Length: 355
Image (cartoon, rainbow, N blue to C red; front, side, top):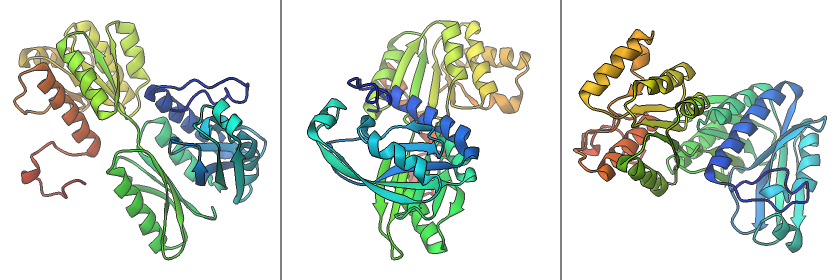
């Protein structure tokens, strides 16, 4: 996992972060990218590598010619090469070879020595703003460039259907979009070279990991935490109202609220989510509980259209009877909502299976 980017620069041994930290790092990177966009931004990505052991995909450094930078590559072990390159790449594309000795790699928290070919290239203002917004908001995003960094394209949105930029030909654009959307179906962040007849493309795809906020205690909350862990998602439990509202106000599109507590005071969390407009909002409860909550929200000024964003009672109708089965029904609805699907049986769906 991505540690404190400044640890290596301070001479400290980096601390491995949780998936929550990785998500926060991507949000910070997106925020920095948007902030720097107007100053002329360069990005540095890993074109090729050997050694280092297992490392995270989708790592990137962004920066300006003036020397301001954000992001990290391989726990800061490549800073000596990456930071000068990102400043230079704001003006034009170039590559640089970077080598890390065994002792320096281990000090940075990597498994072993290694080498990497780094690609630095400019990112136009429009590209930077769109990519930065997607990363900051926890939405799927892909950056695809030619292997020489001469041209780049950004794809964003739940199905990567929003396209910014072009690679110089319709064939390259189509190859980039097809590869990114195919990889998106795997549900994991990746960095890959994509071979085409016109030359290789470098693709970085960021798929945000859902983070589930369970409000309230009990067997269903425990089952949700277990189900989230099984899927590689993160989860946390909260019972304090102020802390819950603050967490929901900071939601990205990848975040999930499951409200188990029926206390009307927690309507404030749903109101915060509706105002914020990001994330999945779900609330457990009987039909009677849902009706009462609905009336309270409408009375507070929520419109019928806005109320449709609250999934209550949360979960798909699979006949769940146990806490574990209820947790399955809830995460299944989250998966379906993220994919823009209705959660129907595959046999009844006209769409492509596995897409």
